[in-house]
Length: 165
Image (cartoon, rainbow, N blue to C red; front, side):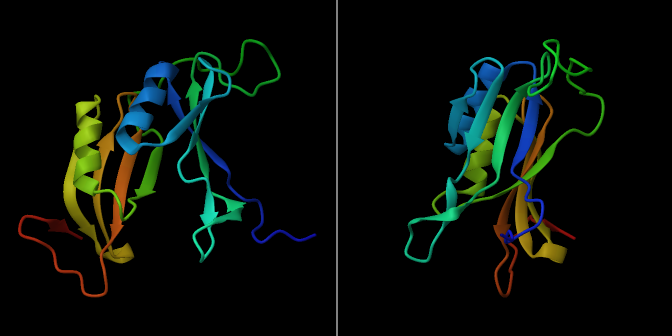
């Protein structure tokens, strides 16, 4: 049996040293379902279930899932003590995730919720012409970068004050 795509990416993990707080952060900011698998060690974020079929029902193809992993003991690992290093890397670049904002939400509202829940805003109201997208970005309280993305449209007109490249 051949797969529709080779070597499908299924998980990206957000490293944290406070997994329960990180689970609350993503639940509060994005409204995502967050499942303890097991609680305190790893949480699975299910941002969108499966890709929807044209009739709106869930299709057979799963969306990318995100994980919240405790840097003190990242799982899975074949030994009880887990993988080194067991601390967050706050000095350099960390995970950067791009989120396509759904039509029933608002990029600025998400940014506001993120900041209210401890995030640091990186920028707001930027247009990236290469991919025709409007974006905001923030760092979560553990240093992971999230870029919020909306489609620029067929003839993007930027409001006053937006930056562009």
